[in-house]
Each structure stands twice: as structure tokens, then as C-alpha cells.
Length: 187
Image (cartoon, rainbow, N blue to C red; front, side, top):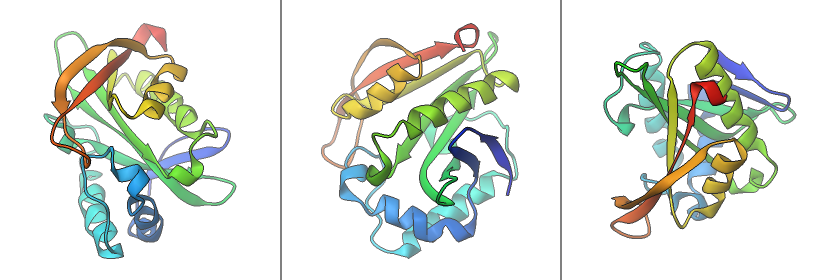
């Protein structure tokens, strides 16, 4: 298990099969998954199945990705409890201008509102910059998921606009998405 980076309160590391119980606890929460592109977990088997896919991607940690399905996810661990409280990941796209990383994240509603996600996102920005992974980092959120947008704003990302009927979630067929970005020189 490789640690990606550490902050004052968090460790961001590769997921392991041993994280299934924590992941199940997070992803069975209907308040979380209503904004997600994946369905609510019905059993711990759903967590085990997801972890098999995630862990397999670590064998090729820095490939060029082509879709958000190719995103590499990492566990957000609250150090004081040694507990997985969320997920943070990115997809990397190549370009002649230095590459783009697309950010994605979620956190257990039990741990939201404490600044943990902003802390993790800023840590990922620093990691991406120090490893020269991308010159631009972008993220999108369902416009109804206001809390996700606040994380992007607090992390220093700039609002770029609304992408109409851009994505789907578990509450309806198509939803508008707000687009944010931060550039290498702004980190």
C-alpha cells in the first residue's frame, strides 16, 4: 500500500482489500450517492467488487486516461481514527500543453463540514504540481451538490461556467454541472 501524501489530519493512500467495511459504510449512505454516478451499495460485496477494480489500476499508476471511468482512486484516511472517510482521485489526459488532471472525490456525510475534503484536495494539488502530472486541474459537480462546489472554491479553484445537462446521477437522468479549474502556476 503506497501513501500518496499526508496532511496535518489526513493520509491519502492506495485502497486495500481491508478497506471494504469503511467503503461500504460510506457508499451505502443515500445522502452521499444521490449525487454520484454509481449506485448505492447494497452489501459489502459491492465494496469488495469496487476495491478489486481500484486496486488493479495501481499496477499502472500514471497512465494516460481517456474517460472518468479510468480515474485512479485513493483512500482518504482520518489519522486520528485510522479510518477511511472518503475517496479522492484523478484522471490524467495528455495534451501538447502539459496535460490536464480531472479531479473526483466523495466523503462520508458523517465527516463533512470539518474541512477534511478541502485539505485533501489542496494536498492533491500540491502532489500533482510536485510530480509535474498536469498543468491544469479541473473538476465538475452537479449544480445541486452545493457542498462540492464550496470545496472547489475553498481549495482555490476558479469557476468557469455551467455545462448544461452534462452528467447524470442517482436522482435523475441528466443534470447541469458546474466546472472549476486551477492552473499549475496558481497552486
